[in-house]
Image (tube, helix red, strand yellow):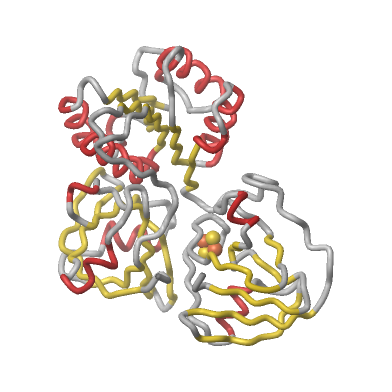
Amino acid sequence: MNPTFNTLRVKEVRRETEECVSVLFDVTPELQEQYIYKPGQYLTIKREINGEQLRRSYSICAGLNDNELRVAVKKVPEGRFSSFVNDTLKAGDTLEVMTPMGKFTTEVDASTEKSFVFFAAGSGITPVLSLVKTILETAPKSDVTLFYGNKGFDSIIFREQLEELKNKYMLRFRLVHIFSIENLGNELQNGFILHEKVEKLHAAFLNGQTVDEVFICGPEPMIFAVSETFEKLGYPKENIHFELFTAPTQRENVKLDIPQKQVQLNANVKIILDGEETLLALDTNGESILEAGHKAGADLPFACKGGVCCTCKAKIVEGSASMDVNYALEKDEVEAGYILTCQAHPTSEKLVVSFDD
Ligand code: FES
C-alpha cells in the first residue's frame, strides 16, 4: 500500500524533557489498520506554518504492546516544525499524518533468541525505545545492551521509562549512559561516541559475547564510528542497521556504489502511482523525478527529500536511472530496480517508474 496522509486528532502532548515532547494520536477504528506499525518506524507529519507547507518525520516511540501511536519531537534550534510542536500544539488539535514508514526495524517473536546491541544519541533514542521495549516484552530469550549518549542527566529523553525497563528486565537489559558534558567520574562513560570510544565500550561490555544485531540511531559521526568499528571487528555488514536522524552531509558511497550519470539526454518518463499514469519529459541533469512529478500534478509521496527516509521509493519498470545520493536503499533493493525518486534522474530515453510495485 502506498503511503497516504490522514487527519489525526492529537490526544496528548506530554513533556518528556525541557526540549522534547511526545505526541499521542487518536486513531479512529476505521484507520487503525493503516496505522499498524513495526517498532522503529516513523510518521511523516505535514502542516502549513507561516504560509509554508512543511513536512517532518518523527519516529514512533511506543512499543508494540503499548497499543498507542506516539512520536517524540525534540526542539531543534531554528526548527519551525519542532518549535510549533513543542510550544503551540495541544490536545484536540489535528495534524495530517502519513501512514508508518521505515526499515529501521526487526521481526521478533517469543521464539527469537538473539543478543541485540543499540547505540543511540539524543533524540535518536526514539525508534530505539520502540525496538528495545518490543524486544524485551516480546522475546523473553533475547537480551539487549543499550549505549545511550547525551549531554548529561537532564537531557536524557525517556529517562524514567528506561529505568523502569532496567528494573523490570534486570537480567536481559543493560543500559550504559555516556555523557558528553556532565562528568560521570568514569572515563569510559564520558565523551562522544566516536571510534575510540566505541572500541573501548566494545572491549569493556561486549568482548567474548555474541552480538547478533547492531542498531544505531543518532548523528552521522556516531553512526559511522559505530558501524565502521563493528565492521572492523568482524561483524557482518548486514547485521548492522542504522537510521540517520538529520539529512546527511554529502558523503560518497555510504551504503553502495552509486553509478554516476554518464549520459545527457532528454527522457520520456512515465510515473505510475495508484494505477494512474503521469507522463513528462525530463533531462538527465535536470530536477529529480519526484520534483518533476510534483510539478506535473502527481501527488508522489516524500518526506526528507534528502535520500534518507525511503518514503519516495519506487521501482524502475522499464529503462534506467541514477541517484545523486542514497542513504536508505540496500544494495539488493537497488539491484532489484528500486530508486529514491527524490534523488533519481533518467539515464535512458524511456523510463517507466512505478510506486505501486
Ligand atoms: S523523500 Fe526521503 S529519501 Fe526521498
